Amino acid sequence: MLRQLLTTAALVGSSTALNNGVGKLPKMGYDMFNAFECNYTQTTVVAQAEAMVKHRLVKAGYNSIILDDCYALVNRSANGSIVADPAKWPYGMRNFTDTINAMERTRAIRGRGATNSKTS
Image (cartoon, rainbow, N blue to C red; front, side, top):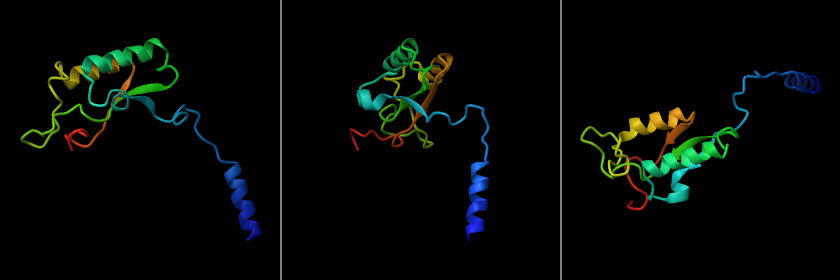
């Protein structure tokens, strides 16, 4: 038993990891819903992303914009797809994604499907 414990300790102590930058920081970003609840639009989100770049938060690792809820219409399309609210995203999600990616940012969209936490 002691021999197994010492062998395991030796193996664990000698393990190595790649030094490629992966996993050095957890995923960090700005969650629009936490700040604005359902009161945000494409303009608001892009302004927040620009502020994060300006204030060097992106360089510090805060490189995600998170659309947590309220970005989509309550009802899905006829084929079951989530539909971005055209009143909030007048230029479409592709334009939004391209804009965010041009700032060297990533975006994450999550939520409760096409439901809205204020109405469900």
